[in-house]
Image (cartoon, rainbow, N blue to C red):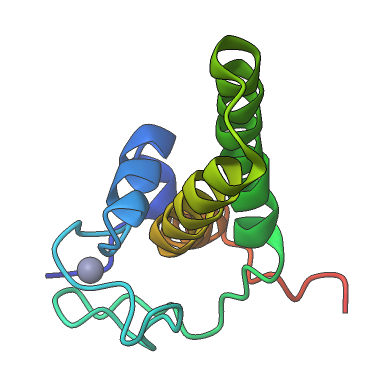
Length: 126
Ligand SMILES: [Zn+2]
């Protein structure tokens, strides 16, 4: 398979493929070799990803999403049921951790995909 022109792939496809932790170019190869470390090259289409640095983008969007889901839920449960502090702690801390660790690599994949599509490496300001 040849290298696809990033501009010919829709932002939606790039976001979707990255969110599934797949290569934004072909959608088949794995994007990560460990939990958050992306591969140097796609195993299927050889597109290079090792030079792309998403830095704080995934963490920012993960905190933004998880915070906007967990905090309203916690407030709603408090207003409706007034559970004890222990119930709050035993519910919201694990939920926050599960959502954070579940979403972080997916959001990083989507971030790397968008950076790749825009032909940015994340090192432009250095
Ligand atoms: Zn690929």
